[in-house]
Image (tube, rainbow, N blue to C red):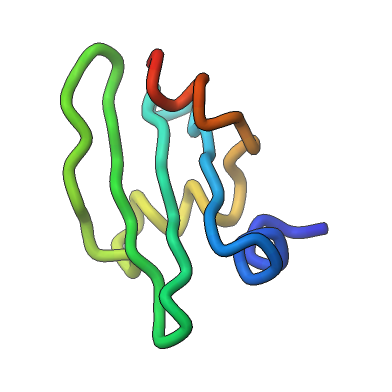
Length: 72
């Protein structure tokens, strides 16, 4: 199952992008997606889901748990 399919099915997905050393939280709203990025030890912030950074994560990121996202 692709990350996009997982997001549509579950409504939320947490992803690790090892190249950028960042984790992402994507939330499906039914009319689009919300995206937050968090770099190691930093506070998460919202970004546009159509940025290269977000697209790279949704296409190639590894699914992680909410706990892994929060501890990052």
